[in-house]
Amino acid sequence: MNHVVSSSNNFIHLAITYCYVLFSSLIELAVFHLVVRITIAFTFTQYAIIKYNYVSMALILSSFSKLLLILMIIWDYNEIQYTWVVGLYALASNVEALTAFLDTSYLTSAFIIAFGVFAKIIVQRFLLPELTHVLL
Image 1 (tube, rainbow, N blue to C red):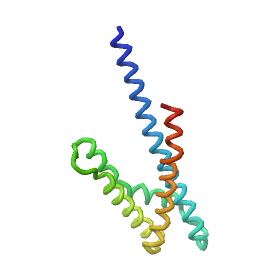
Image 2: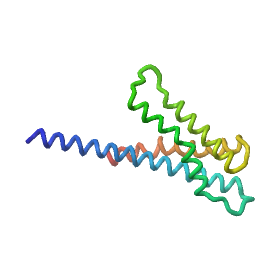
Image 3: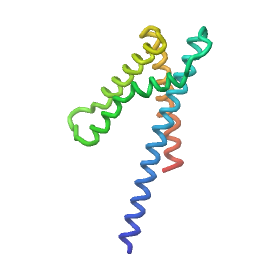
Image 4: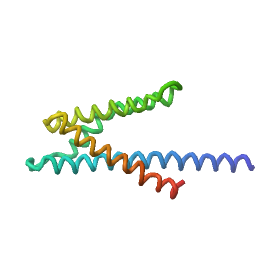
């Protein structure tokens, strides 16, 4: 009987941990998209209407390289951490997608993506640690 209670407590703790990881990833994604949209709105004031849902679709589709991180969970890479390469590739794909969608230069698109990344780093450093103490 004691073993059943212990395993159910482990399951509950594991479920809470997975929900926390999902919640923090969703917050980071939402902040990134929101800051990119706001930066586009301030950068491209000459356009009357920019379809922001297309901006989000371009960012999401160009971030599919992040699915490679699932392979890194399946296979064990002990020697070098490759997650930063996948993240860098996803950011380069985001810049390319914004450049194509907005018909602008790479420098302008990189500037916009850099603001989104900066906001995501601020959330990771300041907001999510506070949520960790509250939720876990």
